[in-house]
Image (cartoon, rainbow, N blue to C red; front, top):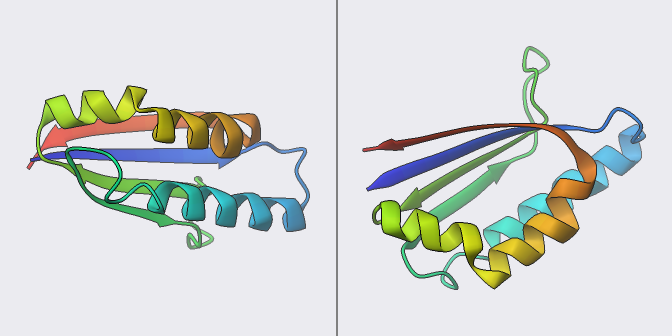
Length: 100
């Protein structure tokens, strides 16, 4: 199995209210992909980090294998969420993929 972990920081120009709305949209959009993409076993989005954190949103997803992760990256349902809900509102992205 493969873990795919992403940490995002939201854009500074977003108000606190906008940030909360964006975080919920990201969570709803990404978690709705479960069961729709071959090889995607589990997907969770954390939007309430502790104040000691320097990221606003975390994606924690699990795939059957690297092939499933590669398919997810280009799957139209994932690309739509990324293009509409994530990329327009984030300023940084850090990723770590690893076998478990």
